[in-house]
Image (cartoon, helix red, strand yellow):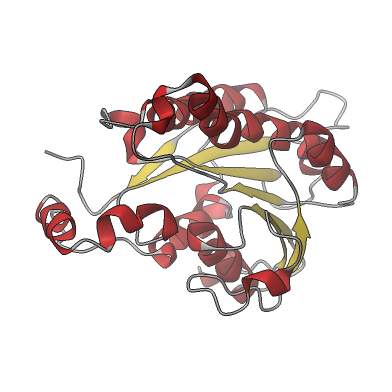
Length: 257
């Protein structure tokens, strides 16, 4: 059954694919034969050179401010064909900065509002996909969607919103049009637990916090971008052809207790 993870001839876009979980996912699709584009925040791919967790080898890079709907629409229009859209953009503000209107809006714009902007910009291409089962959207949220996160109301609310968006779009786009002019789009999500990326350095770079976090994870280790990428490959494949509107928790058992 390994053929179902062969993405040769498929087109993939990973928004937020310049580093961390998004980058790991982009490289996983590339390793399976896909032509992979990534959108990031810096002016060029060269600006990520030498940065841990960032490998843009073999990926087509475009700088896009996903909080700017006009930029998203223009960048989306430049993509002629698309089979898989992965939305991995995200941000968080610490030191209670999310308790201001400005900080709250900043996080929600990136973590939630931009998701809708991206899927709307790429909807026509995904509906035109000839991949088995049609187009696929994968949204990265967080286990924060399922419990409180003291100090980060915007991060929490935006990730919970992302889970709700996956449910609603999964239902809305599940069917092809009656005349066959628009194919189905499966929309699913992944909710990572504690993964060692630049967004989690506040925990992973502090030995006491890290030790406490590891004690709360039944599997006893941090997640990796590759752990998340494996689930993304599954969700975009025919193996998951009857799954839509679902968010899979990938956390080593973190939220079981």
